[in-house]
Amino acid sequence: MKPFNVTMHWFDIHNDIAYAMVRLFLGIALLIRGLILLADPAALTELAGPEKLFWWFSYITIVHIIGGLMLTLGFFTRLAAFIQIPILVGAVFFIHFDQGLMSVGQSLELAVLVLMLLILFFLFGSGPFAMDKKMERKSKA
Figure (cartoon, rainbow, N blue to C red):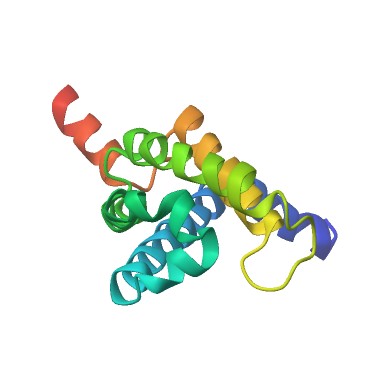
């Protein structure tokens, strides 16, 4: 067996680890985004403008912090993803869409990527390395 085939076989067997790493990264990124908004409320106003989203500030901040933590832990993953999808739809279509692709700073590409990942975790759940699975196993026992 060639070394490349052995390596690819290992990755095929352990692809759940990659899924968990993506969930962890997304959760931590959203948690950090929420903490940034909490520390600097003007960041949201700069991004969206006071007339567009400022009254959503509390909702967006709380959902990013709590939802990001839930995604990181894999705790009620589908719910955590679901409650953040409207925020990212708003970011894609009402904030970044006019800026177009390859703009400086927070961009359309990043917002679409986060939205797609949230949809993925909403549809497919947390994966095997999550609190959701541990709770599921305990309830079956």
